[in-house]
Length: 102
Image (cartoon, rainbow, N blue to C red; front, side, top):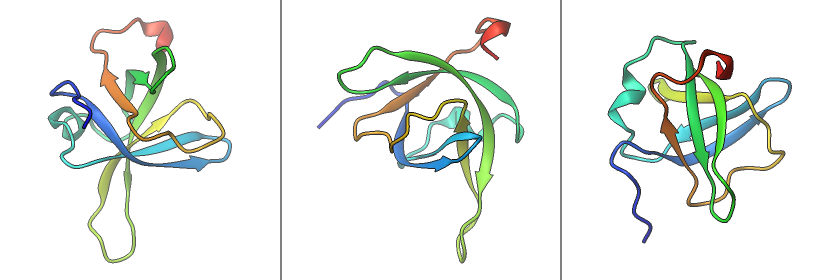
């Protein structure tokens, strides 16, 4: 079993949104920081994928509402790797990141 930092957002599911990027939903439990920012807030993140170097990228805070379920917080990554993210992928929030990343 993999061990992640306490404040990591472990990717539960990712969905490609053509022309926008990759929508990422967290695995439970979601990190506390995911509940804080207002919708559409720009965030700086570091994406960690097994066997690849970390990738700095911007994202926005979003919500996804599926039929019969309450809305869930999600992140829209400003990247589209062309495939779902592999198991073991996680995101790290970078507070105070350089403005050019956002």
